[in-house]
Length: 130
Image 1 (cartoon, one colour):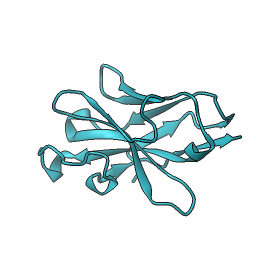
Image 2 (cartoon, helix red, strand yellow):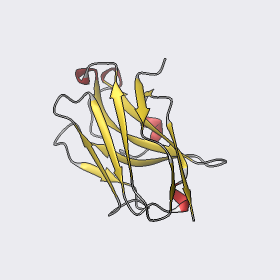
Image 3 (cartoon, one colour):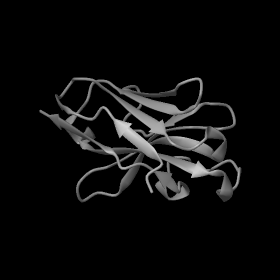
Image 4 (cartoon, one colour):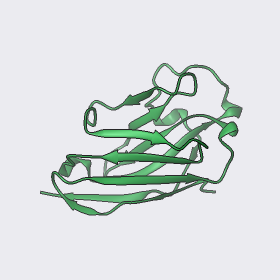
């Protein structure tokens, strides 16, 4: 069961921008960490950006630092990913994921590890052409 609905994916030229949105169907109190992940064809899942439940700080993958920005609305029900200066290697399926409260409230040593998240959406496709 997908508990997130993502939107905003599109085909763009390199150097362009996109803003992805993700709407949650569950209460923010039911999860701890939340973030964006991506998976390109024939590649593993990659953590793009996540928000810490402890202080609201963001952690970014090295490949997107300085280009992508994660944010959420005041209710915590909608998550955004602003993507600037897109590159062909950003082409992937992007999806939201969250770590449910049932997994515990401990601070993650590696919050970008997709294996730590048990709630995810269906994804939205981003295609960047050169």
